[in-house]
Amino acid sequence: MPAFSLSATTLDTPDPQGLARFSQRLLGGPIVDPDPEWATLRPEGGGPGLSFQREERQVRPVWPAGPGDPQMQVHLDIAVDDLEAAVAAAVAAGATVAEFQPQDDVRVCLDPAGHPFCLFLP
Image (cartoon, rainbow, N blue to C red; front, side):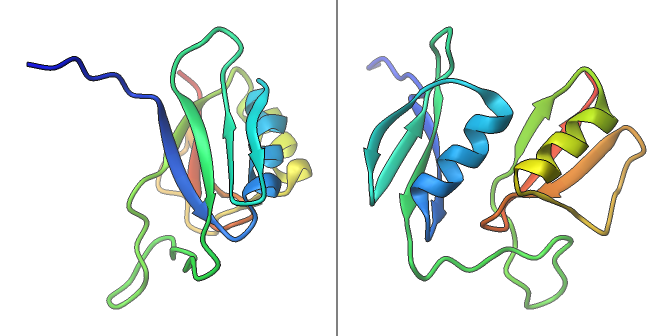
């Protein structure tokens, strides 16, 4: 069996550099591969990164999706130590808080490209 190692999770966006900078404000780490078509955010301590590729026709998912709506196929779970402060920081960075919140100890937010992500207390 060959060795497998996750390098990154990649999100489509019309603005790879903008979404990389948004994510960097929340997660830290350097942006590598700065290119109009692609960017990767790497964690300071190593490990899998978060990549962003240009997709001009990206369709924003709907949260929560109804029949016929574009559904999210992946979302990020981000552990935080202060949920209220983390939501405020995400909004200041350009996120919006989703109207529908399924749990009291989790906040679903949408990044500038519309990808849902969850902030939660571990």
